[in-house]
Image (cartoon, rainbow, N blue to C red; front, side, top):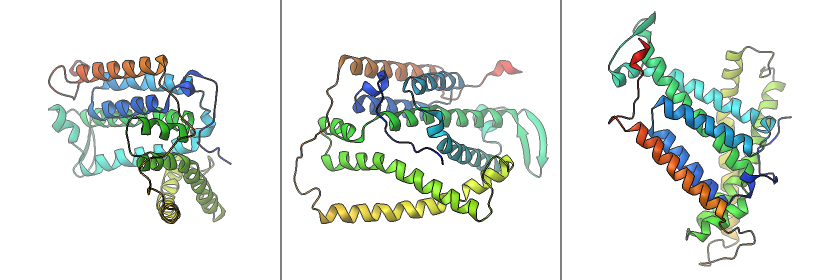
Length: 277
């Protein structure tokens, strides 16, 4: 059975950082990745993300199943972009270099491939930081950190519950996957990659419905217990910001600022290597 992604306490630099520090890194990294279409910036960010992932000592076997699920979504997303807008890259970069004709109005162009490469890099840049954040952040300590910056404790508690719910979603994913395989739907390495991608995508809707049902149960249980009645609450798990936290926060701000400066230096966030041809 696949391992579940959840917080596991480890003695390493990433785990010793405050949850607030990791949240700031995650948010700034995500925003920067979404804003830029500069391949150079995205490639550098991807390398940094992988290094941070390694430093967090996250077990690859623990995240492999979810990574495959994300990869399925990414491939379907890229194919949908080409299906509905096959020349979006040509419009953005202002040129059209045809590689070969597929059928009808569909012709594969270098500009479209380059545009979709940037989209893939965007997702791959964020994914390692998501895994690192989930596996190295104590939900209770993280909620306490958010409350220290004056966020309402109801919101903080909701975030903590969301982080604790991630392993349940993965457990449901594995149960649905096993049920599908018991019905003869092959999802292992025995099937070809396209069959596996199609079969894995069929898990999405049962997973969503199962998650919505559990969310409703948790909401009703908290309401019956009077959650949110008081204006304040105390926290058992809390961690003060140390010098290492401030250093990481400052470095993250500087790196994000540098990335956006390089992105918008020529007045456009779309970088195109005209020297290729």
